[in-house]
Amino acid sequence: MSGRRSLGGRQQSLLSRYLLIIVAALLFIPVGIPLTFAGYNLFNLQTAEKPPEEYKLYSNITALEEQWHQEALSLSGQTPDAIDRRLEELSGSYPLAAMFWVDGGGQTRQIHTPEDPQLQGQLGMDRIPAQWSAPEAIAFMKDAARQEPLAIVAFIGDRADAGEGFLVMQIPEKITEAYRFQSLSSWYILVLLIFFALFVAVSWLFFTGIRRRLLRLQTAMSFTGGAGIPEPIAPGKADEIGRLEEAFNHMVAELTVSRRREAEEEGLRKRLVADLSHDLRTPLTVIRSHLHVLGKEGLSRRGQESILLMDERIESLSGLIDNLLSYNLLSSGRVTLNPERKDVLRILRESAAAWYPLWEKDGFEVDISLEGEPLYWIIDESWFRRILDNLFQNIVRHARSGKYVGVRTVTREAGRAVVISDRGQGMDSTPEAAGAGLGLSIVDLLLNRMELARKTVSSQQGTSIEITQPQANNLNKI
Figure 1: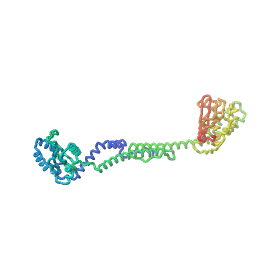
Figure 2 (figure 1 turned 90 degrees about the vertical axis):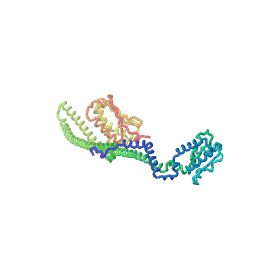
Figure 3 (figure 1 turned 30 degrees about the vertical axis):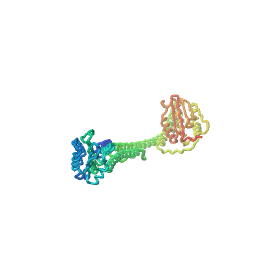
Figure 4 (figure 1 turned 120 degrees about the vertical axis):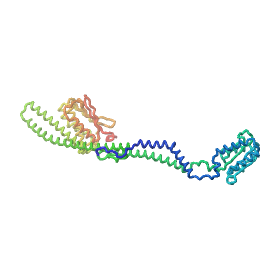
C-alpha cells in the first residue's frame, strides 16, 4: 500500500462525542430530574384512584383554615348556647370531621364526631379531656402542628387574649391521605439509578474504547515484522484516532517502499563492489608482473625509482580492493565468525612481531608493553588479527611522519584494555593515502561482531585507539 487511504463515511469527532456526554451530565440534575419528577406526578394522576366524592369538601386545607378562623371571629362575644348551635350546624356541613370547642374556663363543650367507626378511631376523641390544663393544651397544640391527626384550631374572637376559648376541627387521616402528595416510590428511585448507571456506562465505554484503540496502535508500533517494519492495522472509525491510524498505515507503506528500495540499492552496491574487485584484481596482477620484468632490465636510477613507486601504488590499490571486498562480505553478513576464548596479549605479540621488520625498515620507534597475566577475550583469532593488521597498516600509511608505534595495556573500571597509539598528525589531517576510513569501518564491523568496543582519541600530537571488552562479557573477573 503506497498511497494514503481515505476514511470513508461521515467524519466524526471524539471531541463532539465527549462534549455530548458532558452536556448530558450537566443537564442530568437541573433538567433530567425535574422532567422525571413531573412525569412521575403525571403518571400518578393518571393511575391513582380518585378519592370519594364526599372527601372533596376536605381537599383544600388552606380554605378550611380560613373559614374556620372566620367562624371563630364571628363567634366572638356569643353565648355558649349560640356557639353550640353554630358548631352543630358546621358539623352537619362537614359530617366526616370531628368538632368541639373549649370555653374560657377550660371546659370541653359540645363534641361532634363522624358516624364511621374507622374515622372515629383515627381521631382519638376518647382522649379529649373534659377539663383542660395548660400542659394538656400545649400537648394538643403540638400534635395538631404535627398533623397527628390534622387539627385546625382557632381562638374564639380569633385572638389568644380574648379569653373566650377555642374551636377545634379534626380531619381523619384517611381523608387527608387521599389528597396528600404521594411520596417517591421505590420504582421511581430505581429509574433514576438506572439513568445514572447508563450515564456512567456510556462514559466508561467511551473512554475504554479510546484506550483500547490507542493500545492497539501502541502494540502495532511496538511489534515489527520480518523486515523490521510494523504491520499496518485495520482502519477504525472516522475520527481523530482513525486519522492517526490512517497516518500510521501511510507511514508503514512509505517505510516498506523505502526499505525495499534500500535493499535493492544495497544489493546493487554489493554486486558492483564484488565485480569491481574481481575485474580490477586481474589487470593489477598482470601489471605487477610486467613491472617485475621491467625491473630486471637495465634501467636508469630514475627509472628504477618510478617502477618502485608504481609497485607501491599498485600494492596500496590492491589493499584497498581487499578492504572493499572484506567490507562487502562483512556488511552483508556472509562472514561467519568462530569466537573462542583466546589470550589477546599473545596475539598482539605475534602480530607486532610480524610487523616489526617493516616498522624497523621505515625507522619507527616501537614501544610494546604487554607484560602481566594473560588477557582472555571471546574473539575470532583470524579476524582479530585482521583488526590489528588494519590498525598497524593505518599507522604505516597515515602516521608515518610521527615515526612511533605504541602497543600497551591499561587498566580501566571495566577491566584491562588494549591501546594502540601513534604520533602522527591526527585523523583530522589530510591523509597521505586513501582507504583509512574504509579500514576503520572494517575494524568497527569486526569489533561489533565480537562484542568489543573502540574508543579513539585523536589530535595533532597523535592518535590513540583503545579496544575494550564490556564488563558483562569480561572473562578476567576474579
